[in-house]
Length: 150
Image 1 (tube, rainbow, N blue to C red):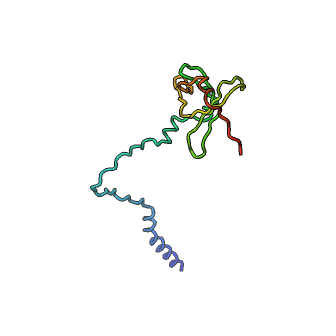
Image 2 (image 1 turned 180 degrees about the vertical axis):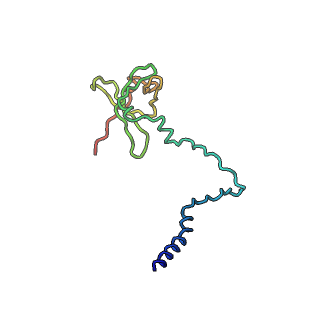
Image 3 (image 1 turned 90 degrees about the horizontal axis):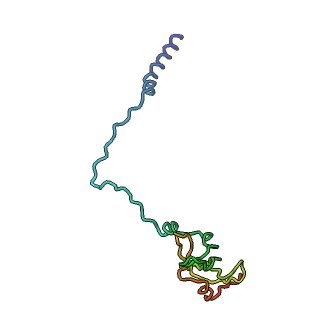
């Protein structure tokens, strides 16, 4: 009986030996395949799309906080007013700058409306300009009054 157990164990070991030897071998990598030639042209490098209007506007855009409170000067570098506020139409119309004109320490000032598009950024002087404006010409404009709150 002892002989049968040893024989049976030897048969099992020998039968499993090829499986063990296969399990221990490293897998062979397949030879590289060459894609078949096609008549389609080679892909070209992608060219970035031109900037959109929003991207171009953001490079030139100014924050409202940089406009409100800014002094407005004319071509002679004389201060003609200060941006008091910006009015924005909810439906997306033109933005209006509300200028404070002719006041001193908050007394005697008058508010006038000027289209924001009329203001020009002077990069050399780093100031907002209103070409052709004087204190008197701005005071001659109709006074701006804020709409009543609802």
